[in-house]
Length: 532
Image 1 (spheres, one colour):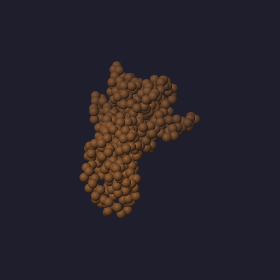
Image 2 (cartoon, rainbow, N blue to C red):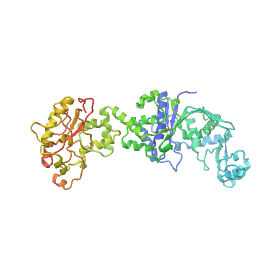
Image 3 (tube, helix red, strand yellow):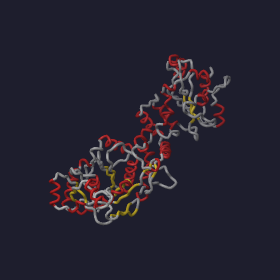
Image 4 (cartoon, one colour):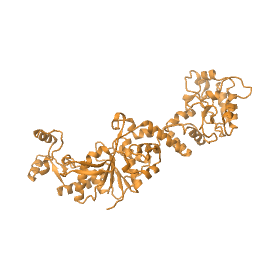
């Protein structure tokens, strides 16, 4: 018997992928990669009323986005296909026929009303479920029911013995004899049910380990009994090992449901989570790489992951912690990689800064250490190409004096000459006032008000010629300035990267009576010579 690990991820295509489902996919993927085994992706689309092609495509999109690639399954193929259960009905019906022929299963004609009536007559709870009444029907009784037009379901004969297994997460688990009634394998129209097709496909696909949510634990004794029957008729060669993963909780100690906003995988993506950050956090919902460490790569997870180390206690989804871990992974990205991802995110959400590639790279580097999710970057950069950030002439007249343009020129020139800004040098140069310039207004300091915190003196800084002030009402200003007072596209980086020509700045200033403002923003604190 082969000992190669084969695990499966087998969701039903209903609704939007949720984080609990993806956590299950992640653990199966990590275990397969850790053991050098095989991950089978199988789609359990046997419920025509609930399943949809849209949800199936969403599953593919989710796994592809997260780079949870499978070894066998849709779009990949494999030796045990097809991998959509709706395409395997003939295989399932053949197994049902073999179970009936071997006496492992039987036809049951009782209606739910008849089952309840028998419970009441015997003084039992009418909601106990099926009472195994049809087990020993004679051929004549079956023929009589059929003559009445009744359509039977097929039920498996449960063993009259305890059903036990050693759960890889929860340890030894036992369901006493008689606690699990004979269960249906088919509907009355003959269509196979999940209770049949899931174990049958696991057997035919040689699955060795079943890692799934603890909500499915009550079905395990039924599946083990079916595996035993499948072994006896030659369909299966083993009972797989089971590992029931802890529930993921939301608010108020309730299981995270599809109605909870945190459960929607694509909602996290739309906010700007990156795959590394989201997967890292989902891995912590029941597992840890070390007691004193929360941030790790997927390659590190693969090297360390063992399902035996999964915690059986429920795990709570903590959005703040998820955000913090995602922020750490954003900071770990190579600047060029981060720039490319941010550019793609902006493009996908209809955001445009109006910057060229070089300018966008400078802008991206300035926000990489400031954001939690990619979506945060837009609030910091949108002034480059947003009418909302046009100048308010009234505010300009109040805040700035006639020497603002000269102050700006002096600040840019002074900072451009400095390779490294120490505390004293910055204090002396960055005030932005040339000799002989009167007035107390500091346009460099004033301009730090469009979402960026003003720099503390002595910290390295970057000057962005943006022409942006805080958004505000502009009664009567639109016609007078005719767009000249919009944020000037581009930036001046204090170490020499000039992305806005001086002629452009001068032309824009000439067309509007209001002088343009610079944007003085804080750069990384540790190294003032860092390229942005």
